[in-house]
Image 1: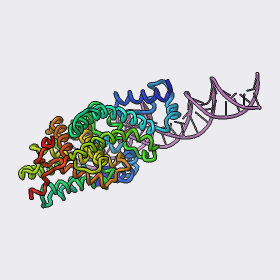
Image 2: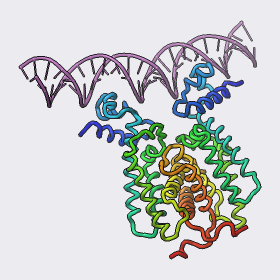
Image 3: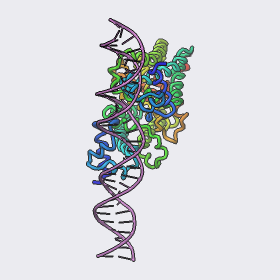
Image 4: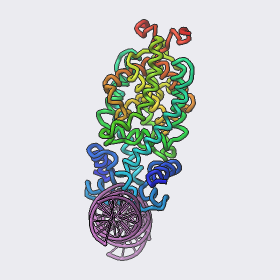
Length: 199
Length: 199
DNA sequence: GTTGTAGATTAACAGTGTTAACCATGGCCT
DNA sequence: AGGCCATGGTTAACACTGTTAATCTACAAC
């Protein structure tokens, strides 16, 4: 097995059971019994090694989304299912989620665009569900991709607030999730009786 | 001026113009011409120093929210204004925002509860706006605090997705923000014609 | 005048990412 | 066969990091 994949495997393993903060080049090297500098023959630096881990993580996340997006049900219901499973993914595998979304990628912009196609796949899936809903006149926003990103951002917010332990102890976690998902799905729906009618 | 506040000032200053990643005890010490270990006489460790910076940041954020929450207008409009100014705060001062929300506080739970009262203040403000809206039968959720946290989480998601450069280049930033805010405010509104009527 | 203590220091430890210089192995070309 | 050179690895070293232990200094209290 090539050293490159050994490094990635060790990195992923250590990420899983030690967390992102204590992920170090030297530890990875020790784990697979190789000198630390050898890693630099396969990855430009630590950041680029992490980017590869991010790609892996996004792949897994997308797979778990796809399983639901392929389901046969109404768009709104589908979105709710996707929302719940997205949050569940984050809570189930906090370290993996952290590496995907909580690492600030300062130099990512100059990354080969092709690498992001895989990343975008998730948004495209969500966008196509929304497009489907739009055709049936369910939803608010004419631009599905924008809408998809907005939903995604909100889901990320919900997930990361919990992971970052920023949730008030007075607010039960499950109530919070349920309510947030309701709010999100409610948010994209066309509201026939506009708020103006209250005035 | 006490060394403690000197440390905090230097820390805040360096955070602002060098970013969180390159914030180091030794650099702070050098900046104020003192030995690195002196910091440990005033802060248990780096984490606790950061916590103090977080508190400061939350204070500022809350002040900028309060200015709007005290405005005299309809609840829904007020929430929209709060939402926009929250996002604006994050985009204007990314480093400050980062330290507030993107640092995972592993041992925060065992923090003196009193310290969080200030932090919670923002949620309480939002909750009271929601409560006001509930009385007028505008909103969806019976539990204002839960709703407040859900909104907050969604705002954080929107903000951090932009800060983390995770937004698709095809989606214009301002469209994204506008749409996300619409989605959020739409989400909390009572929808008189339920989705069921479409079936 | 001694004692104690608060606030600072220096030296050191164990760890980090990363670079430079070096070395071995094996394939290719003349 | 002998020389060449790229590939993939090594060790040593640099410049950092957070943190602790031991020490020193100055000042207040009894």
